[in-house]
Length: 264
Image (tube, rainbow, N blue to C red; front, side, top):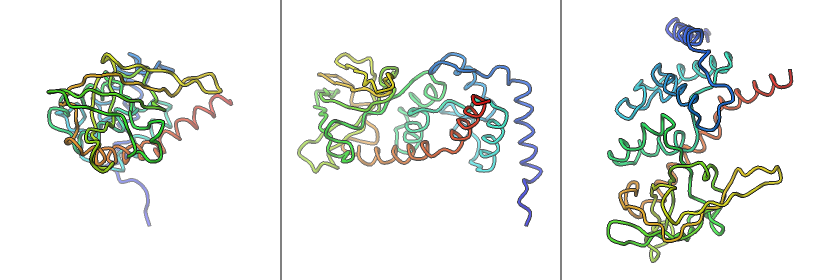
């Protein structure tokens, strides 16, 4: 049995190596979170189809057909060459595929391209002090007021909240319905008045997580994804993509290489 790559795929591998020779010096080294150099690198990767590869062009991606082997070759070569992969994070890896799956056309056009370019940093507003493993027990309330919702409540363990521009958040819009049916999934700016972020400092001295408090936060209804009361369905779509992100072997390979280089 011949398990070698076909000439087509070996030619694709060579294209990546040629790209690395031509552009590898532009790769960011130790770039800050969402830094300009990383954004420039991300733009270059998208242009060549090495990031956002299967995202449609109309939403800022490369527009290629899905091909698992080519995706695997990209990862293999970037890891072997010590080049950083494209940007990831909660917006790119979790929200973008969710919007492609269930978002409105307006939401796709408004958010996907700038998120892919690293221009919008997102955080996830799911867990609450009394709603962790039982996520449907959330109590953060969104009360209707004309074309807006007024949000009051609290989220916890919110990573990147201090840096985020936007949040995708679970709120209770129908408190009288069964808990899984009264939830909506809504997008809004973290710069909205009434939002307070408090860092949770761990024993390492770092604050990787945060508490987020909402006090009379007014947000437009247009931020609701898929429809009012459908938040549980949308949340599960996002969690599906989150599991894929957390189990990404490419990240493990990159980290292993960094550890080996540090030890050497």
